[in-house]
Each structure stands twice: as structure tokens, then as C-alpha cells.
Amino acid sequence: MTTNIQNQWSSQMGFILAAIGSAVGLGNIWKFPYLTGEYGGGAFVIIYLICVVLMGLPIMMAEVLLGKRGAGSPVASMRNLAKEAGQSRLWQLLGWLGVIAGFLVLSYYSVIAGWTLDYVWNSASGTFATNNTPAAIKSIFTDLTSNPTYLLILHSIFMLVTIIILARGVQGGLERAVKFMIPALFVVLIMLLAYAISTPKFMDGVHFMFDINFNKFFYPDGENFSGKGILVAMGQAFFSLSLGMGAIMVYGAYLPKDASIAKTTAIVAFADTLVAILAGLIIFPIVFSNGLEPNAGVGLVFQTLPIAFGQMPFGNIFGSLFFLLLTLAALSSAISLIEPAIAWLVETGKCARVSATIVIGIATWLLGFVTIFSFNEWSEFKLFSMNMFELIDYVTSNIMLPLGGILMAIFVAWLMKSEDVTSELKVSAQNFGYQIWNFLLRYIIPLAVTLVFLNAIGIF
Ligand code: PHE
Image (cartoon, rainbow, N blue to C red; front, side):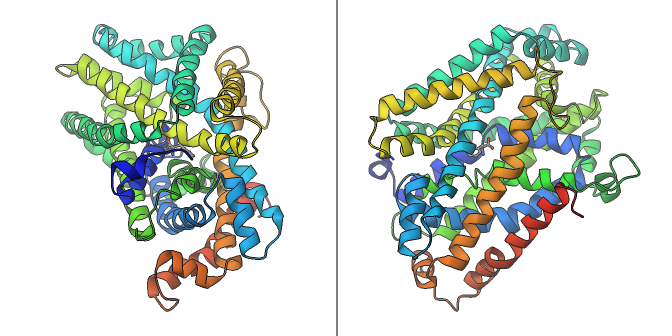
């Protein structure tokens, strides 16, 4: 990966910023609240948090460790590490799985990022202030998603910016931006939280997020048991933390020898979780205070926050600032989604970085059409009762990323030499924290993910 980040900060900080840039994005502010709304609130949140702590954090450590030691694209890293550990070359397929997952995710991620871009303009031009009823705000969103040409323009702009940044290999600059962007996003979120607290139904939002009702969660229709919420909460933990597909592996190379893998990953996971929880605490009070439904789906954020921006003083400015920061946060995630594919193509020696970026960028852009049409022309076309966007999202978040994650866990905990692992972590094999981590990776994570998968395909 081309980066000059080490020259700019102590590298540990560089890694933390790059990883936070990757982790914090649409997953936290767009996806987490709408999934929480769809899966009924508190029970989803608690299972999500358990997945972050028991799976996300240990797997992030494992993935960083693989990247730090493998030092290449995910495909090459896994090939190198398999060789070092005397394992099958087939392990490079794990790198492939990540390359493909990143490409698939970015194809729709860019379309959604296009929506946020449109909302920068909508806020700035005062559209939300003049259309300030929940119904009018909702129709702004439905007008947007039913207009494929406009969605295509927005998607193209976002992909173009992503490609330009990647082709120039200026991640260093982007990470410098992250240093300001994340704190700025945080400040805007705190201000929005203050607004949410001032709404009449703030506490309803809090109860919705934190009252745990497993009945509603496991029996969504009141009768039949469904474990799907667990699969989705787990998938969301992987998605939000950027795990299981090599993004964090590629960034693991930023870590200098003396950095602490445990400490840095804990900071990244904490920051990511905080942003998601804040987003929920802002959005649900607005939902309840305006008589909206929490299960509005993908449009939830776009149909709630503008109400707040339309009402608050200087809402135009805050609104456009917020959506701009969200677009930038999406950009720093987008870059990490596709970097594994670019790094792989460059490594094959067939093309230079600029052409690799263009080729993969165009392929991603083209695939994005599928998502664009899922919201309008093809919205009736369904497989397994999901439209194409939902299907791509389901397969990547709920299957490919967790699968990548358990394979990483198994590789690190069962197949790598334990001296290599402990030396990367700079601990002794007797270290208690190490033993817990190793136990989670060896037994709990593979078992838990397998059970969730088996349940999802209806085996029990
Ligand atoms: N974590 C990013 C987000 O929450 C999305 C992402 C997933 C980025 C996987 C990289 C890898 O928006």
C-alpha cells in the first residue's frame, strides 16, 4: 500500500486514524439505526454490542496481526502467512473472499453515499426548512430514490472522487483529513444529541434503544421463532468495524513494531461503537416525537434528521455540515473497501496503480447500477424475497464478512505458530488477556458464527 503516513505521525496514531476512517461511515449513521429500528430496538442493540466485544474486537486484533505480519494485499498476505505456517496455499482464497466482498459492498455503498451528497445540497439550499413536515421530508427521499438518472449522477460523482484519491495514492492526505473530520463529526453529533434531548419524546427513544425485549426480537410476527436478528446484528458488527474482508488487514501494515495491537484496536472499536450509539440516540427521539415509525428501513436517517435540521436555528448550516462530514466519513470507508482489490491487481504486476484503480473503479461503478435500479425500475425483482441491493448487502454483511472473520480467527489461533502470534502481540503465552483472546478465537467465535449460520439456513 502506498502511504506516507509514517512520516506524518507516530505510526500508531496513523493506524488508529486510518482504521477509524475505515470503520466510521454509513454503517454507523445510516445502517445501524435503521437495522435497530427494523429489529425492534433494545434486543438488537445488546446483541450487537455483545458481538462487538466478543467477536469484533478479537477478530480485529487477529486481522491487524495478519496484516502486520503478512505485509501485502490480503491475497498476498495470506499466501505469505500460509507458507510461513506450513499451511495450504488455498488460504489465499481468504484474501480473495475479502477482495470480492469489498468490491460488492462498495458498489452499493457509493450509491448511498450519493444520497448523503445530495442532502448536503438540500440542507444548504434550505429545502428542509421550507418543507418542514415529516411527510414532505419523506417525499424528498422517495423522489430521490425513484429517480435513477439522478442517483446515477450522484453515484458517479462519489466513485469519481474515490478513484481520484486512490489513483493518486494520497491516503496520507485523507488520513490527515480524518484527524479533523472525526472530531468534527463528533461535535455535530453531540449538538444533534442536545437537540434530540430537547424533543418531547427523548425518553421514548432511549427506551426503544435500551429496553431489552427478546420476545419481540425472536418472535417478530408474534408466533414463529426467528434467529435472523442475531445474524443481522452479527453481520452489522463485522460491517461497522470493517472486519473480515482485508480492509483492516491492509491497514495493519501501518503498525510499527512497538505499537500495541490490543490497545489500538480497542480505541478503534470504542470510537466506532460510540458513533453508532450516538446516531441511534439522536434518530429515535426524532422518530417518536414526530409520530414516525422506527422501522422505516433504508430511508430512516434521511427522513428523520432533516426534520431536526428544518427546525433548529442555523439548521441549514448544521445540516449541510453534518451531511458533508458523513459523505467524507463514507469516502474514507470507501477507500478502504476497495484498496485490497487495487493492491492485489498492482501486485500481479499486470498494471500500474493508476490503471488498476481505474479498472476496478469502473467495474464497481457499473455494478452500482444494480443498486440504483433496485430502488426504482427493478424494485419488484426479488430473489429470496430481497431486491438486488438487499441481496448484495445480505450476502456480504451477513455471510462473506463473518465467514472471512472466522477463517481469520481459525488461521491465527489454530494454524499460526503460537510464538509468532505472541511475538506480534508482545506478550508471553501465559498472559491472561492473551489466553482469553486465544480461547475466543479458537472456540467461541468459530462455534458461535457456525451456530448463527446454521440457524439462518434453517438447520435448527
Ligand atoms: N465500516 C464501514 C462503515 O461502517 C464500512 C466498511 C465495511 C468499510 C467493510 C470497510 C470494510 O461504514
